[in-house]
Image (cartoon, helix red, strand yellow):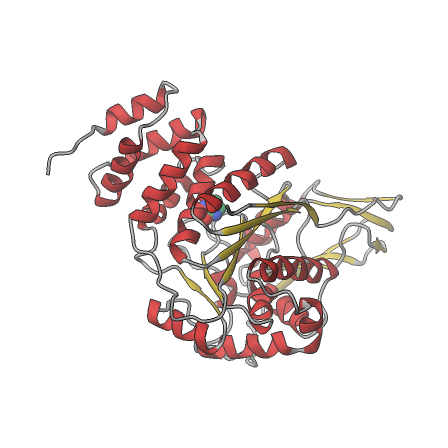
Length: 431
Ligand code: URA
């Protein structure tokens, strides 16, 4: 086949700061998926985009080309309104686990196609795989059947869903080109639009533990995501939420499942409950379900029942004991006072070094590894009492985890004002 463009010309166009033509974008994504554009050429183009950006028209076309690299799911057999949530990634962000069964228990269908963790942010599939027997890989037919029977499914993306993004995301991860608004927005939205849910709520994280470290950058990303969804006829809202300190007390895999179950059983940390209910309310509003209060459904235990059914439907045993780490190292408070600062990024890196995350895509994770924050910012701590519990099966990893935490938590005399988790909401307008 004669190729209509040359990769070198496309790279040069963006390297020199010009706009890519729609036909160039369609070709480069398709040729990369076919293996005609080499990895090193796409790496150079990703870096040129990282440095010179893409405007709204280019980003929309890039997203469409990535959707067209695979097939869209057909959810027409699902009669309930379909709505999904996507988080841009954070530390201790287990919200999908209680949220999907909660929204299903409120009457919507939630097709939550998720990923694995890489670097300091955790992955939903890694967390759920700590449940004995639970299976991440489902066919499209199984996904649809589970949406009809249970109303919620959390599973791996199917191989035919935006395959260009799968290749490109792995490449960006090893070429330091992840934190680019057009590349993040097109990556997320290509998968979510191909998934075909009728509505989407985005949890755009802001702070040290997020890709977007400040509110301006996160707001720009949120607007870009919402605009792409709107252009594709998907009702989208974005909640900007704080990720400067870990969400909840548990960071890792099995420890986050345990905390999610606490939330589903009516307990759990207040910030996890607050964000779960806020996201559920937004999802239900977009799905057109206005007469159900998610906080009441959560408190009633109905969401926990849906969780158990959802886990069993994928081969898991919701009653089985979760894995426990062979070694627990306690980090004590050096003095009495108030914990004024606990940095999300540092805790994420420490949990990753303990074995909760992976350095390379093919690495296994330790299901029991992670961190329990016995204190959160604003809590009183006593000298000698544990502030953090480090869980690992490989105790030789503890010094590296302690090094990541060094200087990243503080005890002071004054209780700092803790702000709200939800910082802003941006809603798309369908015409
Ligand atoms: N999540 C994604 O799916 N893609 C990105 O680029 C960043 C976060």
